[in-house]
Length: 472
Ligand code: ADP
Ligand code: MG
Ligand code: ZN
Image (cartoon, rainbow, N blue to C red; front, side, top):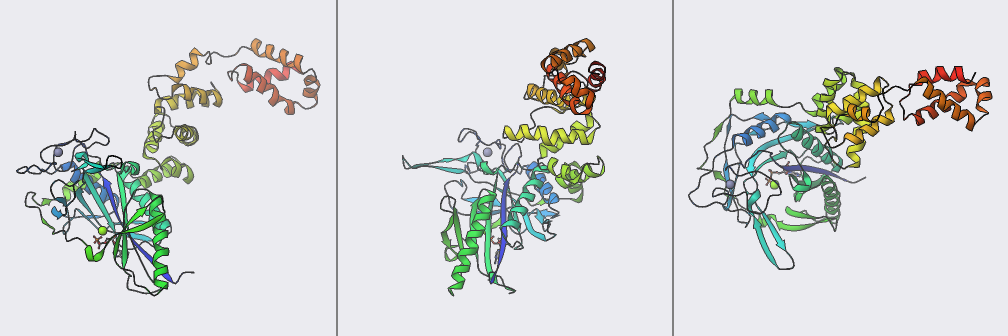
């Protein structure tokens, strides 16, 4: 056992999914051609003035409500000064003294509570593109001015497992609240990890290192493990940890020094004179709260108490917001919660997995039409799955119509079934004696043969009745 305790605090950045940027009317859109979503304001042409995007403030409040924060009645924007080519103004509009949200937190599965310090709203910077071959760097300002929230925790996290669980919960809440997409591979959610070590049981926290800009949960976990080991080895040697900003090197699996505290920036924060403080009333907050979509844990409770689903089903269905809402829509169309859950979790889940997407491949109307046919035994499960594949990706296709065109909805005549019996008997004459001795043993085989030859259109009760007459 280690003689040290690890202390971790996270600073999480998430881009809000507003239509336009935070302080101008440019589109907030990922993947556009470089420098096409820009204007005089976000390019910082002298003489231009910012205008606050109301939706960005509302979504920040919604994020706060989703993580149980207190919403400040007055919020102030400040200028945070630093020089970098992707920051056109030479300062970032951010918040320091009066952020929009304060406090709050998330309870982990173990019952441990991780406190939040704050959530504030700021603007994202542009992006530098370095070309190693031509040795030229270009700048794309499309992302400059995109609304970004920063979620800061208290130093309450003790290890990588807790950090990842916390991050997953934060991401899920932001996505369910409808405020951010949190696509980490697009830089839509990024995380700085602050980490320090102290002797077991000690009150005072040790000196911390901050690891910047981690963009996957896996790197967060790896960076924490690496830093905990690095710092404990230094402490073992009797060295002190210097306060540093470090960078994660994914390939090498280690952190490297970016700058020492001695070189720490003085950002010269001050309230932005171009932007009035904003007043947030109780009524504003109440309106946002009422309009907020249900969070995962609220849907989970609804699935268990209102629909009687097992905890497990509720858990699987609410892991993905689109799937949870898909399920809700299906149950509205067909009041068979457990049957719908089975098809959604297993079969729709598998199709989504195979296609590596988080979007259900069929519409609720299509799925429930198939489930209805399967439940009243018009079709077998196998045919149902075939129909799912056939309508997948095309919301105009009707499973019922396809089934009809395939002749699946016409019943099978007794004569047709008897004809299959004849063929089976010819192929395996011993069946007749076997049937007399132990009908229950051979019935499944006979029914199976009929199903195969009628593509599942026959009803097994009828096949059983006819078989008893035929083979007796
Ligand atoms: P800054 O803005 O300079 O990075 P903050 O005081 O806002 O500093 O802290 C940033 C993050 O670092 C917070 O999540 C906080 O919980 C965490 N933190 C502060 N002190 C420590 C420490 N000694 N060990 C680990 N984390 C810390
Ligand atoms: Mg920091
Ligand atoms: Zn703009």
